[in-house]
Amino acid sequence: MKSITTASFALILFGVGAASADHASRVLVLGGGAVPSGTKTYTTGIRATIDGDSFCGGSLISPTHVLTTTACIGYTKPANWVSVGTHYLNGTHDGEQIKVVSAQNHTGFNSTSGSYDVALLRLERPSKFMPVKLPAADDSDVIPGMRSSLVGWGYTSYPNGTKAYELQGVGLEVWSNTDCARIYSLDDTMVCAGGGVGKDSCNGDTGGPLIKERGPGDEDDIVVGLVSLGSRMWCGVPRSVFACVESLGMDQLGH
Image (cartoon, rainbow, N blue to C red; front, side, top):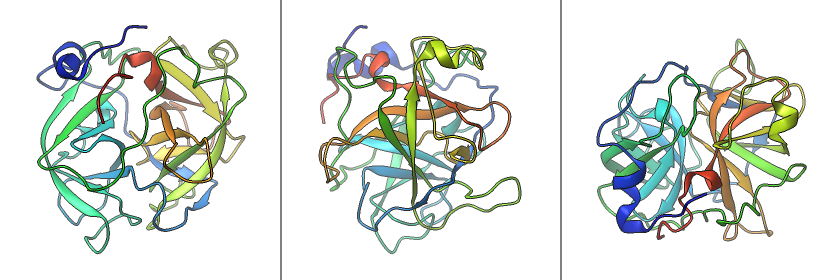
């Protein structure tokens, strides 16, 4: 795995324009519950309008940058706004809403395999909220069997559900890629996690964070994955695929 500096981050890893994508955006946290208001404030909602529904999730990784996945930057709706620190799916009554000035895909993104499924949003002004931490460069932050948390505003039931109005979270276990390869075709830019049948990401959770929690508060949380391919079939399957943040060479991106 290669690390990069802040100055070369966008030039090396991200293309100037958006690449094509052929996998569908997914939108929810299935089988979880609302997180306490005022927590996980690095979780961002990506919106077409300032007060509209968030159609994707993301992670604030520096005051002016949000990490998400490729399906979130224009394939269904334009990623014009990011809502940071909000507990709610829509509106402007909490958090802060910041305009997106640029959106770039990883230059290695492959729409067929799903490799390097990551995109970077640059914000018009700095956010006041604390960014989430990025994983270490030595592959020590993603270990098969470890517990993780997925957060988002996606559907809470499937197929006849609706998006969650309050931010939801669900606990998942990280699986080895070897075990998960029995279901999916994976490479080192992906990580597999699941919580059993009925606990999963789903439509609308795309781009949202898979978190390693290292303490009772959020200040030491690490974003280890981004909701990516999901099950390719249905919401609520035992295991889903996430973009593996530590394999993308971003540990030296400054906060």
